[in-house]
Image 1 (cartoon, rainbow, N blue to C red):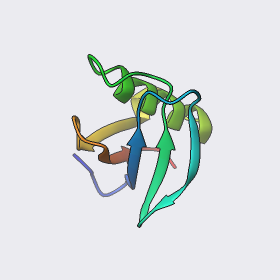
Image 2: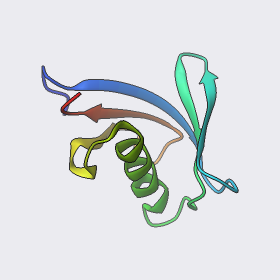
Image 3: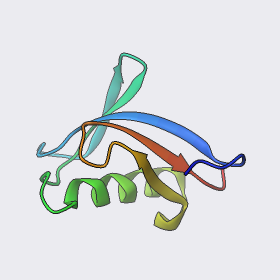
Length: 80
């Protein structure tokens, strides 16, 4: 759940890519290619880890609040 102090980030993910990288905008969402496969939550964990690392945060500060099994996801980011 997104609380009043959290930032919201809408992303479009492409799992199963060769490398994990931000490639631009997809409509109004940030498009991120993920090297992890979309199996057993591996892509979600990779997304959380990649976003946290690039923002200098811990994984606990990033969570998926919408779109657990979809390409379109909404992340809640605490502590920015």
